[in-house]
Amino acid sequence: MSRVVPALSGAAITPRTDTHIVVTEYGSAELKGKSMKERAQALIAIAHPDFRDTLEKSARELPGFA
Image (tube, rainbow, N blue to C red; front, side, top):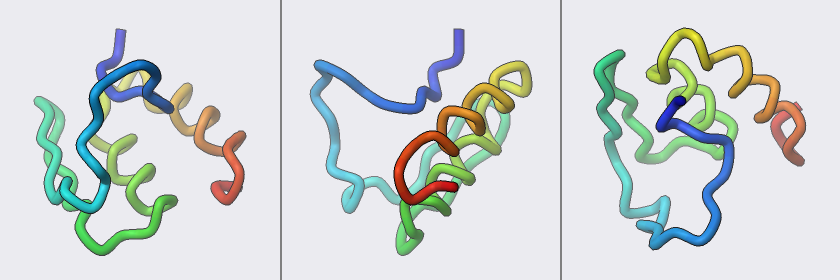
Protein backbone atom coordinates (compact mmCIF):
# COMPACT_ATOMS: atom_id res chain seq x y z
CA MET A 1 0.00 0.00 0.00
CA SER A 2 1.34 3.39 -0.98
CA ARG A 3 1.46 6.17 1.58
CA VAL A 4 1.21 8.70 -1.26
CA VAL A 5 -2.51 8.77 -2.06
CA PRO A 6 -4.67 10.73 -4.52
CA ALA A 7 -6.84 12.31 -1.80
CA LEU A 8 -7.09 12.47 1.97
CA SER A 9 -10.26 11.90 3.93
CA GLY A 10 -10.98 12.34 7.61
CA ALA A 11 -7.43 13.30 8.53
CA ALA A 12 -5.82 16.27 10.21
CA ILE A 13 -4.11 17.99 7.30
CA THR A 14 -1.30 20.52 7.10
CA PRO A 15 -2.28 23.26 4.63
CA ARG A 16 -0.52 22.92 1.28
CA THR A 17 0.96 26.40 1.72
CA ASP A 18 2.84 25.11 4.79
CA THR A 19 4.30 22.04 3.07
CA HIS A 20 7.55 22.85 1.30
CA ILE A 21 9.40 19.52 1.00
CA VAL A 22 8.17 15.92 1.19
CA VAL A 23 10.70 13.09 1.53
CA THR A 24 10.19 9.37 0.95
CA GLU A 25 12.62 6.51 0.51
CA TYR A 26 12.32 7.16 -3.26
CA GLY A 27 13.38 10.80 -3.21
CA SER A 28 12.30 14.27 -2.18
CA ALA A 29 9.81 16.67 -3.73
CA GLU A 30 10.10 20.46 -3.48
CA LEU A 31 6.48 21.66 -3.45
CA LYS A 32 6.79 25.35 -2.56
CA GLY A 33 5.53 27.63 -5.32
CA LYS A 34 4.22 24.83 -7.56
CA SER A 35 0.75 24.54 -9.05
CA MET A 36 -1.54 21.73 -7.94
CA LYS A 37 -0.69 19.75 -11.09
CA GLU A 38 3.06 20.25 -10.54
CA ARG A 39 2.70 19.23 -6.88
CA ALA A 40 0.85 16.06 -7.87
CA GLN A 41 3.51 15.17 -10.44
CA ALA A 42 6.31 15.76 -7.92
CA LEU A 43 4.61 13.57 -5.29
CA ILE A 44 3.91 10.80 -7.80
CA ALA A 45 7.59 10.84 -8.77
CA ILE A 46 8.61 9.99 -5.17
CA ALA A 47 5.93 7.35 -4.57
CA HIS A 48 6.78 3.65 -4.67
CA PRO A 49 7.28 2.68 -8.34
CA ASP A 50 4.56 0.00 -8.13
CA PHE A 51 1.93 2.68 -7.41
CA ARG A 52 2.96 5.51 -9.75
CA ASP A 53 0.76 4.44 -12.68
CA THR A 54 -2.31 4.19 -10.45
CA LEU A 55 -1.59 7.59 -8.89
CA GLU A 56 -1.14 9.18 -12.33
CA LYS A 57 -4.44 7.71 -13.50
CA SER A 58 -6.21 9.01 -10.37
CA ALA A 59 -4.67 12.47 -10.85
CA ARG A 60 -5.87 12.64 -14.47
CA GLU A 61 -9.44 12.03 -13.30
CA LEU A 62 -9.38 15.12 -11.04
CA PRO A 63 -10.53 18.50 -12.41
CA GLY A 64 -7.61 20.57 -13.73
CA PHE A 65 -5.13 17.68 -13.99
CA ALA A 66 -5.94 16.37 -17.49
